[in-house]
Image 1: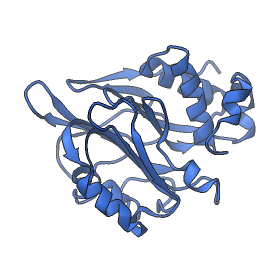
Image 2: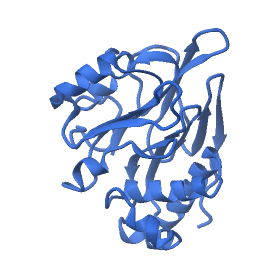
Image 3: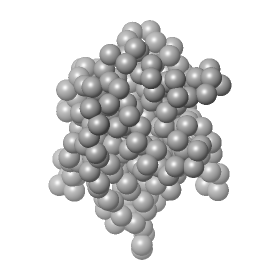
Length: 255
């Protein structure tokens, strides 16, 4: 379980989105308003952001609560980006891999986060895991359900699938193998945000930016009470670019 957020739009200081709003992700680490599973997100945090003219994002992750890291406050004040993904973590299992288990996970141009839990973990994902090459399993950043879900998504991306298909097909595969899973996923390449709702809440907000550009935030829960927030229906795939947001229903597992 966790709270997570992705931003796409005009360049802003990270803190403008992650710390300044009254119920920002920073505050959600100890006082979430819409979190149904877990009460505090103190098992680590992370942020990945895209610097100008660099397609490979930087990441800053720690195993401690976000509020106990004074370096993050300085980082959020001075680092500016037009695309980023951040998460605060409530671990499904205690003590699992520390910093390596904190989202966002990343490879190449992609950043990924999972809010939820895989039902019956770890045995339930034996069949999906068996489809991955041994080298990819050995390269897992952590021994957690989220890390394995990321490996399944990443395998599809490397095989040439677009963000929407990679995320949507992975959700259906995991839900089929592990009924009862909660699979709210966030994926970005710095140009597009793709997300899924499957068993937990997700919201998005858009507002005009510079001419022809939309400022979009996709998050587990709203960071303020602005009427521009929209809740995404369950079993939905969201895709946001710098100009629009589209919603598509996800198919149910075959079983």
